[in-house]
Length: 85
Image (cartoon, rainbow, N blue to C red; front, side, top):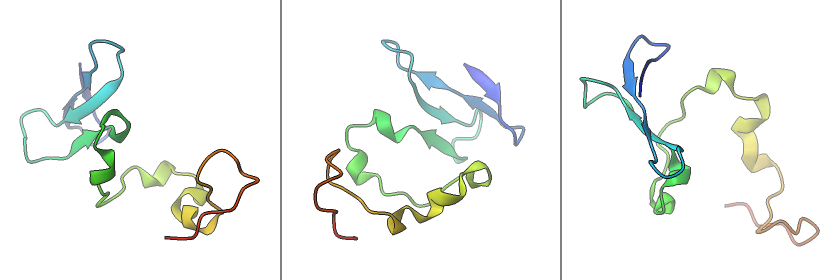
């Protein structure tokens, strides 16, 4: 499926043939341009360290400071918080 991005670039959206989840989106005709990958669809996501964030203009104010809130190893929030990294 191809769509025109806000920038005017045409993006080719690729989907999983089994479930329909969007997986990636390259810019049509420009292999060196931005390549969007849905990290949740990749098994090796622990090796994909972010280098930049995009679409931050629409982010909630709190999202840029997630390190400032308590973090827990699992859903048992009554347990001991994890130490900051």
